[in-house]
Length: 93
Image 1 (tube, rainbow, N blue to C red):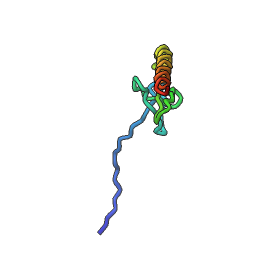
Image 2 (image 1 turned 180 degrees about the horizontal axis):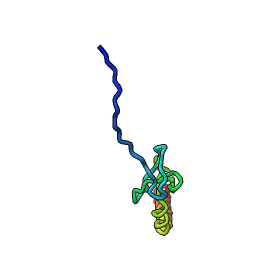
Image 3 (image 1 turned 60 degrees about the vertical axis):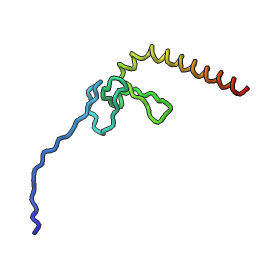
Image 4 (image 1 turned 180 degrees about the vertical axis):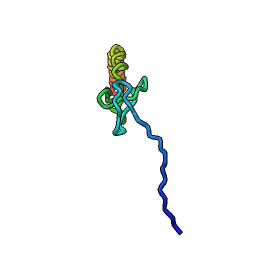
């Protein structure tokens, strides 16, 4: 015999909020800041494409603090590329 009955069940639901602006993120799409881990909504995230399989996401504070570092990193990456080119030219001769 099968008897049906109605029961009330309590479930826990996580609500996600942006750590920058406090907006509730209802569609489940959010990222964490690459360095500090703050939860970011689409409006507050700063996306940096790495050219690889993933992008990096930054909060406005970490992005601003990194300005001086990103400039120096780009200069060093350019120097690295130049050294690889010199190495390759030397091997091709």
